[in-house]
Image (cartoon, rainbow, N blue to C red):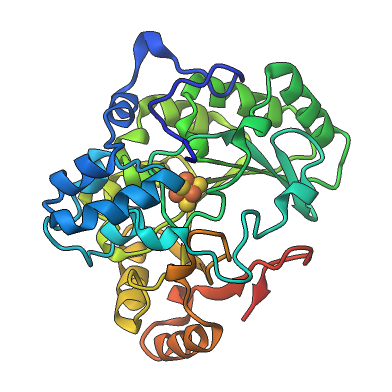
Length: 346
Ligand code: SF4
Protein backbone atom coordinates (compact mmCIF):
# COMPACT_ATOMS: atom_id res chain seq x y z
CA UNK A 1 0.00 0.00 0.00
CA UNK A 2 1.22 3.50 -0.78
CA UNK A 3 1.03 5.36 2.53
CA UNK A 4 1.25 9.10 2.37
CA UNK A 5 -0.68 10.25 5.33
CA UNK A 6 -0.79 13.68 6.93
CA UNK A 7 -1.52 12.04 10.24
CA UNK A 8 1.85 10.32 10.29
CA UNK A 9 4.61 12.42 11.81
CA UNK A 10 7.63 12.30 9.54
CA UNK A 11 10.86 12.64 11.48
CA UNK A 12 13.67 12.37 8.95
CA UNK A 13 13.77 15.88 7.53
CA UNK A 14 13.63 19.40 8.93
CA UNK A 15 10.77 20.33 6.63
CA UNK A 16 8.77 17.36 7.68
CA UNK A 17 8.66 17.10 11.43
CA UNK A 18 5.45 18.30 13.03
CA UNK A 19 5.41 21.23 15.44
CA UNK A 20 3.54 18.96 17.84
CA UNK A 21 3.66 21.34 20.79
CA UNK A 22 1.39 23.93 19.20
CA UNK A 23 -0.64 22.24 16.52
CA UNK A 24 -2.63 24.69 14.46
CA UNK A 25 -6.30 24.11 13.72
CA UNK A 26 -5.51 22.93 10.21
CA UNK A 27 -3.03 20.38 11.56
CA UNK A 28 -5.67 19.00 13.90
CA UNK A 29 -8.04 18.71 10.94
CA UNK A 30 -5.39 16.81 9.03
CA UNK A 31 -4.83 14.40 11.87
CA UNK A 32 -8.58 13.69 11.98
CA UNK A 33 -8.92 12.98 8.24
CA UNK A 34 -10.81 9.85 7.22
CA UNK A 35 -8.30 7.15 6.34
CA UNK A 36 -10.26 3.99 5.75
CA UNK A 37 -12.69 2.99 3.01
CA UNK A 38 -15.19 1.83 5.63
CA UNK A 39 -15.25 5.24 7.31
CA UNK A 40 -15.46 7.01 3.95
CA UNK A 41 -18.42 4.93 2.75
CA UNK A 42 -20.17 5.32 6.10
CA UNK A 43 -19.61 9.09 6.29
CA UNK A 44 -20.94 9.58 2.74
CA UNK A 45 -23.80 7.11 3.10
CA UNK A 46 -22.68 5.03 0.15
CA UNK A 47 -24.26 1.71 -0.66
CA UNK A 48 -22.16 -1.05 0.96
CA UNK A 49 -21.69 -2.52 -2.53
CA UNK A 50 -18.98 0.14 -3.06
CA UNK A 51 -16.90 -1.13 -0.16
CA UNK A 52 -15.08 -4.13 -1.69
CA UNK A 53 -13.82 -2.05 -4.63
CA UNK A 54 -12.88 0.80 -2.32
CA UNK A 55 -10.90 -1.61 -0.18
CA UNK A 56 -9.02 -2.90 -3.25
CA UNK A 57 -8.11 0.63 -4.35
CA UNK A 58 -7.15 1.59 -0.80
CA UNK A 59 -4.74 -1.35 -0.68
CA UNK A 60 -2.86 0.29 -3.58
CA UNK A 61 -3.01 3.92 -2.42
CA UNK A 62 -4.56 4.69 0.90
CA UNK A 63 -7.64 6.82 1.44
CA UNK A 64 -7.15 10.24 2.98
CA UNK A 65 -9.92 12.88 3.04
CA UNK A 66 -10.44 15.56 5.70
CA UNK A 67 -13.87 16.67 6.85
CA UNK A 68 -13.62 20.14 5.30
CA UNK A 69 -13.53 18.49 1.87
CA UNK A 70 -16.05 15.77 2.70
CA UNK A 71 -18.58 18.42 3.68
CA UNK A 72 -18.77 19.54 0.03
CA UNK A 73 -19.73 16.05 -1.20
CA UNK A 74 -23.39 15.13 -1.52
CA UNK A 75 -24.11 12.07 0.67
CA UNK A 76 -25.37 8.99 -1.11
CA UNK A 77 -24.26 10.25 -4.54
CA UNK A 78 -21.53 7.95 -5.92
CA UNK A 79 -21.12 10.08 -9.05
CA UNK A 80 -20.44 13.29 -7.11
CA UNK A 81 -17.46 14.91 -8.91
CA UNK A 82 -15.60 15.50 -5.66
CA UNK A 83 -16.22 11.98 -4.42
CA UNK A 84 -14.88 10.58 -7.70
CA UNK A 85 -11.54 12.25 -6.92
CA UNK A 86 -11.14 10.54 -3.54
CA UNK A 87 -13.05 7.24 -3.63
CA UNK A 88 -10.76 4.25 -4.31
CA UNK A 89 -12.00 1.78 -6.92
CA UNK A 90 -11.11 -1.75 -7.96
CA UNK A 91 -10.26 -0.26 -11.39
CA UNK A 92 -7.04 1.11 -9.85
CA UNK A 93 -5.67 -2.41 -10.09
CA UNK A 94 -5.86 -2.30 -13.89
CA UNK A 95 -2.70 -1.21 -15.70
CA UNK A 96 -3.29 -0.83 -19.45
CA UNK A 97 -0.27 -0.47 -21.74
CA UNK A 98 1.46 2.86 -21.32
CA UNK A 99 0.33 3.47 -17.73
CA UNK A 100 3.40 3.35 -15.50
CA UNK A 101 4.60 4.26 -12.01
CA UNK A 102 6.73 7.26 -13.08
CA UNK A 103 4.88 8.70 -16.09
CA UNK A 104 6.99 11.86 -16.24
CA UNK A 105 10.39 10.14 -15.79
CA UNK A 106 11.10 12.37 -12.80
CA UNK A 107 13.71 9.96 -11.49
CA UNK A 108 15.91 10.96 -14.43
CA UNK A 109 15.72 14.64 -13.44
CA UNK A 110 16.56 14.41 -9.75
CA UNK A 111 20.16 15.68 -9.33
CA UNK A 112 19.78 16.05 -5.54
CA UNK A 113 17.50 14.37 -3.02
CA UNK A 114 14.17 16.19 -3.07
CA UNK A 115 15.10 18.41 -6.05
CA UNK A 116 13.72 17.95 -9.56
CA UNK A 117 15.19 20.00 -12.41
CA UNK A 118 13.23 19.53 -15.65
CA UNK A 119 12.93 23.00 -17.19
CA UNK A 120 15.23 25.97 -17.79
CA UNK A 121 15.17 28.70 -15.18
CA UNK A 122 13.33 26.87 -12.43
CA UNK A 123 13.66 23.89 -10.11
CA UNK A 124 11.14 22.01 -8.05
CA UNK A 125 11.68 21.16 -4.39
CA UNK A 126 9.76 18.35 -2.70
CA UNK A 127 8.99 20.35 0.43
CA UNK A 128 6.69 17.74 1.97
CA UNK A 129 5.99 14.07 1.26
CA UNK A 130 2.48 14.29 2.67
CA UNK A 131 -0.80 15.62 1.35
CA UNK A 132 -4.02 16.78 2.92
CA UNK A 133 -5.92 14.51 0.56
CA UNK A 134 -5.02 11.51 -1.56
CA UNK A 135 -6.31 12.17 -5.09
CA UNK A 136 -6.88 8.96 -6.96
CA UNK A 137 -5.50 10.37 -10.24
CA UNK A 138 -2.25 11.66 -8.69
CA UNK A 139 0.72 11.27 -11.02
CA UNK A 140 2.99 10.97 -7.99
CA UNK A 141 0.98 8.20 -6.32
CA UNK A 142 4.01 5.92 -6.68
CA UNK A 143 6.67 8.59 -6.05
CA UNK A 144 9.51 7.38 -3.78
CA UNK A 145 8.96 9.98 -1.06
CA UNK A 146 11.06 8.04 1.43
CA UNK A 147 14.08 8.51 -0.85
CA UNK A 148 13.27 12.21 -1.23
CA UNK A 149 12.88 13.34 2.37
CA UNK A 150 16.16 15.15 2.89
CA UNK A 151 17.77 15.90 6.23
CA UNK A 152 18.80 19.51 6.85
CA UNK A 153 22.33 18.73 5.63
CA UNK A 154 20.89 17.26 2.46
CA UNK A 155 18.70 20.31 2.02
CA UNK A 156 21.87 22.37 2.07
CA UNK A 157 23.07 20.38 -0.95
CA UNK A 158 19.86 21.27 -2.78
CA UNK A 159 20.24 24.91 -1.79
CA UNK A 160 23.86 24.82 -3.02
CA UNK A 161 22.53 23.55 -6.34
CA UNK A 162 20.35 26.66 -6.61
CA UNK A 163 23.13 28.98 -5.43
CA UNK A 164 25.54 27.57 -8.01
CA UNK A 165 23.28 28.12 -11.02
CA UNK A 166 22.59 31.81 -11.72
CA UNK A 167 20.24 30.86 -14.57
CA UNK A 168 17.70 29.75 -11.96
CA UNK A 169 15.13 32.46 -11.21
CA UNK A 170 12.29 30.47 -9.73
CA UNK A 171 11.94 27.92 -6.95
CA UNK A 172 8.83 25.76 -7.01
CA UNK A 173 7.64 24.16 -3.81
CA UNK A 174 5.85 20.90 -4.49
CA UNK A 175 5.23 17.57 -2.83
CA UNK A 176 3.12 15.84 -1.69
CA UNK A 177 1.68 19.17 -0.74
CA UNK A 178 4.26 21.73 0.36
CA UNK A 179 1.78 23.46 2.65
CA UNK A 180 1.49 20.23 4.64
CA UNK A 181 4.86 21.20 6.12
CA UNK A 182 4.74 23.41 9.21
CA UNK A 183 5.09 27.17 8.95
CA UNK A 184 8.30 27.08 11.00
CA UNK A 185 9.83 24.71 8.50
CA UNK A 186 8.54 26.58 5.44
CA UNK A 187 9.73 29.90 6.83
CA UNK A 188 13.21 28.39 7.24
CA UNK A 189 13.28 27.10 3.67
CA UNK A 190 11.92 30.29 2.14
CA UNK A 191 14.44 32.30 4.17
CA UNK A 192 17.24 30.23 2.65
CA UNK A 193 15.81 30.74 -0.84
CA UNK A 194 15.46 34.50 -0.34
CA UNK A 195 19.16 34.72 0.40
CA UNK A 196 19.99 33.48 -3.11
CA UNK A 197 20.27 36.74 -5.07
CA UNK A 198 19.36 35.40 -8.52
CA UNK A 199 16.07 33.88 -7.34
CA UNK A 200 13.13 36.14 -8.18
CA UNK A 201 10.05 33.99 -7.74
CA UNK A 202 8.59 31.51 -5.31
CA UNK A 203 5.91 29.28 -6.77
CA UNK A 204 3.85 26.98 -4.55
CA UNK A 205 1.75 24.17 -6.01
CA UNK A 206 -0.85 23.16 -3.47
CA UNK A 207 -4.32 21.77 -2.91
CA UNK A 208 -4.39 22.61 0.79
CA UNK A 209 -6.23 25.96 0.46
CA UNK A 210 -8.98 23.99 -1.26
CA UNK A 211 -8.96 20.90 0.92
CA UNK A 212 -8.59 22.68 4.28
CA UNK A 213 -9.06 26.43 3.71
CA UNK A 214 -8.08 27.11 7.33
CA UNK A 215 -4.50 26.31 6.26
CA UNK A 216 -4.30 29.91 5.05
CA UNK A 217 -3.92 31.26 8.57
CA UNK A 218 -2.00 34.11 10.16
CA UNK A 219 1.13 32.01 10.71
CA UNK A 220 1.36 31.17 7.01
CA UNK A 221 0.53 34.67 5.85
CA UNK A 222 3.26 36.12 8.11
CA UNK A 223 6.17 34.45 6.33
CA UNK A 224 4.56 34.56 2.92
CA UNK A 225 3.75 38.29 2.95
CA UNK A 226 7.20 39.14 4.32
CA UNK A 227 9.11 37.40 1.54
CA UNK A 228 10.99 39.58 -0.96
CA UNK A 229 10.29 36.96 -3.64
CA UNK A 230 7.40 37.39 -6.06
CA UNK A 231 4.85 34.84 -4.98
CA UNK A 232 2.68 32.62 -7.13
CA UNK A 233 0.34 30.00 -5.72
CA UNK A 234 -0.95 27.46 -8.21
CA UNK A 235 -4.08 25.80 -6.89
CA UNK A 236 -5.14 22.42 -8.22
CA UNK A 237 -8.92 22.66 -8.49
CA UNK A 238 -10.81 20.37 -10.85
CA UNK A 239 -14.46 21.23 -10.26
CA UNK A 240 -16.46 24.33 -9.35
CA UNK A 241 -18.06 22.52 -6.39
CA UNK A 242 -14.66 22.49 -4.70
CA UNK A 243 -14.83 26.29 -4.29
CA UNK A 244 -17.10 27.06 -1.35
CA UNK A 245 -17.22 30.27 0.71
CA UNK A 246 -14.32 29.17 2.91
CA UNK A 247 -12.13 28.57 -0.16
CA UNK A 248 -13.13 31.97 -1.53
CA UNK A 249 -12.05 33.56 1.76
CA UNK A 250 -8.73 31.68 1.74
CA UNK A 251 -8.03 32.93 -1.78
CA UNK A 252 -8.82 36.48 -0.69
CA UNK A 253 -6.32 36.17 2.18
CA UNK A 254 -3.62 34.97 -0.20
CA UNK A 255 -4.29 37.82 -2.62
CA UNK A 256 -4.13 40.33 0.23
CA UNK A 257 -0.66 38.95 1.00
CA UNK A 258 0.51 39.84 -2.51
CA UNK A 259 0.14 36.40 -4.05
CA UNK A 260 -0.73 35.83 -7.71
CA UNK A 261 -3.28 33.02 -7.88
CA UNK A 262 -3.41 30.58 -10.79
CA UNK A 263 -5.13 27.25 -11.25
CA UNK A 264 -4.28 24.11 -13.09
CA UNK A 265 -6.74 21.29 -13.50
CA UNK A 266 -6.58 17.76 -14.77
CA UNK A 267 -9.19 16.68 -17.31
CA UNK A 268 -10.80 13.72 -15.55
CA UNK A 269 -13.42 11.30 -16.82
CA UNK A 270 -16.49 11.52 -14.61
CA UNK A 271 -15.30 14.67 -12.84
CA UNK A 272 -15.05 17.57 -15.29
CA UNK A 273 -15.28 16.05 -18.79
CA UNK A 274 -18.06 18.31 -20.04
CA UNK A 275 -18.21 21.84 -21.43
CA UNK A 276 -20.64 22.85 -18.69
CA UNK A 277 -18.36 21.62 -15.91
CA UNK A 278 -15.26 23.27 -17.37
CA UNK A 279 -17.07 26.56 -18.01
CA UNK A 280 -18.49 26.59 -14.48
CA UNK A 281 -15.01 25.92 -13.09
CA UNK A 282 -13.45 28.85 -14.96
CA UNK A 283 -16.25 31.19 -13.92
CA UNK A 284 -16.05 30.13 -10.28
CA UNK A 285 -12.25 30.42 -10.26
CA UNK A 286 -12.49 33.99 -11.48
CA UNK A 287 -15.03 34.81 -8.77
CA UNK A 288 -12.38 33.61 -6.32
CA UNK A 289 -9.73 35.80 -7.92
CA UNK A 290 -7.94 32.86 -9.56
CA UNK A 291 -6.98 32.68 -13.24
CA UNK A 292 -7.28 29.35 -15.07
CA UNK A 293 -3.85 28.42 -16.36
CA UNK A 294 -3.48 24.84 -17.55
CA UNK A 295 -5.93 22.03 -18.26
CA UNK A 296 -3.74 18.93 -18.25
CA UNK A 297 -4.64 15.71 -19.93
CA UNK A 298 -4.09 12.86 -17.53
CA UNK A 299 -0.50 11.77 -16.93
CA UNK A 300 -0.53 8.03 -17.61
CA UNK A 301 0.10 6.83 -14.09
CA UNK A 302 -0.63 3.23 -13.14
CA UNK A 303 -3.91 3.07 -11.22
CA UNK A 304 -5.62 6.08 -12.85
CA UNK A 305 -6.44 4.86 -16.36
CA UNK A 306 -10.18 5.01 -15.65
CA UNK A 307 -9.90 8.83 -15.49
CA UNK A 308 -8.39 9.11 -18.97
CA UNK A 309 -10.05 11.27 -21.66
CA UNK A 310 -8.64 10.63 -25.16
CA UNK A 311 -6.86 13.52 -26.88
CA UNK A 312 -9.47 13.91 -29.64
CA UNK A 313 -12.26 14.24 -27.11
CA UNK A 314 -10.19 16.67 -25.04
CA UNK A 315 -9.56 18.89 -28.08
CA UNK A 316 -13.25 18.86 -29.02
CA UNK A 317 -14.25 19.82 -25.47
CA UNK A 318 -11.85 22.74 -25.42
CA UNK A 319 -12.98 23.91 -28.86
CA UNK A 320 -16.57 24.03 -27.55
CA UNK A 321 -15.47 25.65 -24.31
CA UNK A 322 -13.81 28.46 -26.27
CA UNK A 323 -17.26 29.39 -27.64
CA UNK A 324 -18.64 30.01 -24.16
CA UNK A 325 -15.81 31.78 -22.31
CA UNK A 326 -13.79 34.96 -22.73
CA UNK A 327 -10.18 34.26 -23.68
CA UNK A 328 -8.76 35.12 -20.27
CA UNK A 329 -10.84 32.34 -18.68
CA UNK A 330 -9.61 29.68 -21.13
CA UNK A 331 -7.06 27.26 -19.67
CA UNK A 332 -4.42 25.96 -22.06
CA UNK A 333 -4.86 22.28 -22.87
CA UNK A 334 -1.46 20.66 -22.39
CA UNK A 335 0.35 17.41 -21.86
CA UNK A 336 3.61 16.93 -20.03
CA UNK A 337 5.96 14.89 -22.20
CA UNK A 338 9.08 13.57 -20.45
CA UNK A 339 12.22 15.18 -21.84
CA UNK A 340 10.45 18.11 -23.53
CA UNK A 341 11.63 21.64 -22.68
CA UNK A 342 8.14 22.77 -21.68
CA UNK A 343 4.54 21.58 -21.43
CA UNK A 344 3.24 20.50 -24.85
CA UNK A 345 0.07 22.26 -26.10
CA UNK A 346 -2.49 19.92 -27.61
S1 SF4 B 1 -2.73 15.48 -6.73
FE1 SF4 B 1 -1.52 16.79 -5.32
S2 SF4 B 1 -2.74 16.85 -3.42
FE2 SF4 B 1 -3.52 15.16 -4.65
S3 SF4 B 1 -2.40 13.35 -3.91
FE3 SF4 B 1 -1.25 14.17 -5.65
S4 SF4 B 1 0.28 15.55 -4.80
FE4 SF4 B 1 -1.27 15.17 -3.22
